[in-house]
Length: 427
Image: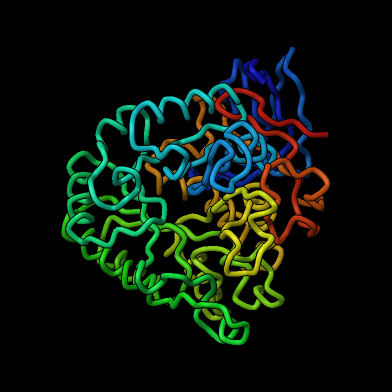
């Protein structure tokens, strides 16, 4: 894992949405760097990877993962979840600041980066807390945290009820060109809710969270974005009205991007029938029409990226009456297979699906990753998209909380190279 790669990847279908490349090519990696891409290459001494009939993609970029060193009901460590990511072709993980302790000081940033580097499986890109302790009152030292290695700031889905605090945060971030990541949800309108406020929740007797809880908060954030000029990334939108607000904001030229979780593209509120706690997620799974609108927004470019919204939980966290279970899905290992499933269903073209996992999220994060660039440390993956596998047979995340863990899904990652080093190799 610690040696720099010396590989010749032969005859794979190379898809790089950043350059529009989509053709069968050889790729040569020497001393960890991508040195050549051509129709036919030779490299004496290099390890040969036969990728005929497979995809060769830039390393996948996940814009939202929740990591913790086994606390607060969560399972796993940075090392265990980075290994799970590598097995799924993911080379860069954008980590929310709701770790334990919260990422609101430089020492925590250094600790996370050290553990990420030591694991070597995937690179963790930490987000700083917007406010100290994620409490929504006093701004964190954003510039200090940026200098320590944070790529942006977020309140990790915690409410920012005070509009003045949000405005000052946006102004501060805009002054120092720090991206702000925001998951919109009004605290008062969503308090106590665990499901979409719709017919399924009513029938099951579950407390609901209305879509307007998201759109009110999103509208406020977009107005402040327009006022301050901050680079704003909206995370995990869940309803049709939010997609329309984003579409309008982009038409007006606001510096805004957005992502959606893979779960909201495949599931709707009907997944909660029989009180399936593995489908308890915040924001909640909404109506079928919301899901269809999100798919349309992903296809037309309104939504820029698809994320796993990965949150690994212990089994006890899901063993309670539905409202008392913890919200979250362990999604790293199924992100790519579920995107390939959408391609199979003809909901997305393959190049667009890959863009949503590579160059799209990279642009959202403002990072020079998610593409194949000659001369740089190689980050890529080789995927057999025709392979079918049931993930429970080789699940690596410490969190088993997934509605797809026993589902046969398309795609198997055969090789992952993360910043010049082989982080996953499968037969």
